[in-house]
Image 1 (tube, rainbow, N blue to C red):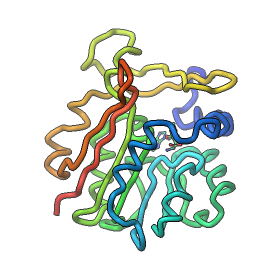
Image 2 (image 1 turned 180 degrees about the vertical axis):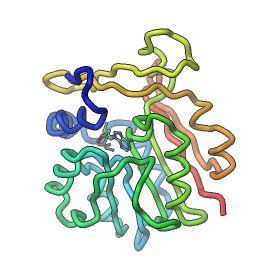
Image 3 (image 1 turned 45 degrees about the vertical axis):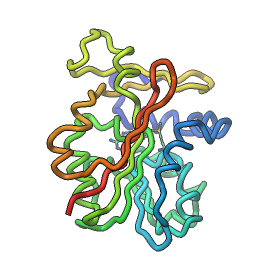
Length: 221
Ligand SMILES: C[S@@+](CC[C@H](N)C(=O)[O-])C[C@H]1O[C@@H](n2cnc3c(N)ncnc32)[C@H](O)[C@@H]1O
């Protein structure tokens, strides 16, 4: 369990291996299938960053399609696991959060991110950073927890209030609760974001209360 006082990243440092085993038992959930359906253009020869790559579940998938794959995650333990799982990509894996990276401007053709962006305390710095490191017309495809799902877990039941929720990751043994910030749709699609990116696609989970949504953004020139 993530206790009080632990830094946010330490939660994943501690739980990384259990998380990997839980995911491995059901690696292609609907959300990942929906995400991959958005990868319509060829990846061959493209520089691709998986931001918040965790233990590296998706890195081999991108590498097999010919992308030059980079991966970042703020959790040292997650990156250590990713290095073991994906030795071919190891030299291009680094410990850094999505909101502040060390990559040069206009470096990537694609940035992908699954269930990671919502962990950023504020979304604007993360979108600013993705805009900075993408080439003009580069694609940022992300999938995050759905604000409705998150709202259900807020203490104050006030949609626009800044809150940290506790979320229990499914299928983990022992159960693992993670603290994370709640975000609204207006943060994901703020004027700041829409000034810098064109929205190409949007999809959301089909559950009674959707678990996730995804967006495919193109960096404006
Ligand atoms: C649920 S895991 C998903 C990992 C991977 N993308 C996958 O689909 O298996 C969430 C990941 O987000 C990472 N994370 C936490 N804060 C982050 C931040 N500010 N920027 C990027 N990733 C973050 C965690 O360390 C963890 O590896």
